[in-house]
Image (tube, rainbow over all chains, first blue to last red; front, side):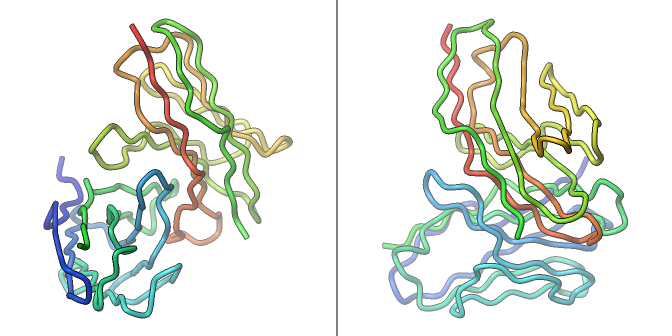
Length: 114
Length: 114
């Protein structure tokens, strides 16, 4: 079965640079979530989109922005990168009408800021 | 707001030992509850779920029962294997918002020795 696809899997950037992460949800899923997981930490919710509109916002820095496109894929744009942005970034998708509402996670994109 | 509290780790067991990882939650309404597992270097995988009080989720020998009276969702397995070594996250999703985000506990590292 198709899963959530994230790219790139690994990314190395310098401080103050910009990075873009992409997420392709499971086909027919209409909701996308972004999470940030620091070393040894639990995943922290950043932002979510339902039917291409922002549905919820968590602890996402102002330097970050995200959107969901017409084909339901999503991109997380991160500017003015800081050392503290080094983390594993997960994308997850779900089907809003599904009763259990479980989230399906991608394998993550590991961002290292030097 | 919603919150999830897991027992502090790490947990170290011998193969075939009994496992319990405690999880309690605070939430409004009637949340859905989940256990996710993260193997080294990999993404989050759904282990089991329960959507209403007294539901028992089970998968791969793991079980957890949704206890509304004690607001708990403890994870148990009768006989652990070395391959169960991973980080386990308890999570909840608020009821009433079909596209609601997951709130994670801090994770419990499990190491199983032969």
